[in-house]
Length: 260
Image (tube, rainbow, N blue to C red; front, side):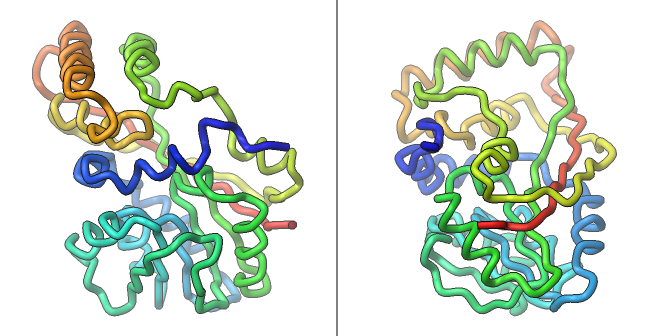
């Protein structure tokens, strides 16, 4: 089975763009309960974690609360530099490793492998096999996502996103279904945290959209980016009474075994 075209390497490469790196800090943090769930998954093995596709450390840095060492791997040097500059990013227990998960040397075994909104960009058969090989006996692969509760403007905003996205190959998909259909991953459990509020300005909320695939300012024309920003601001003004957006954000954790 071929991987969906919109998840190809030419689209994943956008996360090395300076504009996406700069916009990434406007994404909401993972709820604290995510890390309680992940701690419960490290029972018998070493308290070492591989965070695959770590970006600027949204998972990797908080994982230091529950781990003795975190190896954080990402192909974007710019993302890693942003992570090092964050609070906690210089902790000696955190090793920032530049490289692709498909072939970067690893220092397992790991009691847990995490992927935070990143696995969909990887070569699934290759990395799932690597995860299987570096996990300690009884260790889990945990696929972690941020999930925003549906808000009143969701449909209208999605129509704007569909109109302006540079990823014209995008089609809706379910990552877990894709992995199971290919017999690459066996789910052992799933949990979702309680929603927590996250408040930011309208401008920061719109900028967070520019941290997504298809909205890199480096790949949109200046005119298209400005048009999208204004259209999004006008849309939100019809739903909000001020310049503040409050989102309700949950975390989802699905853990299981790579079976390649």
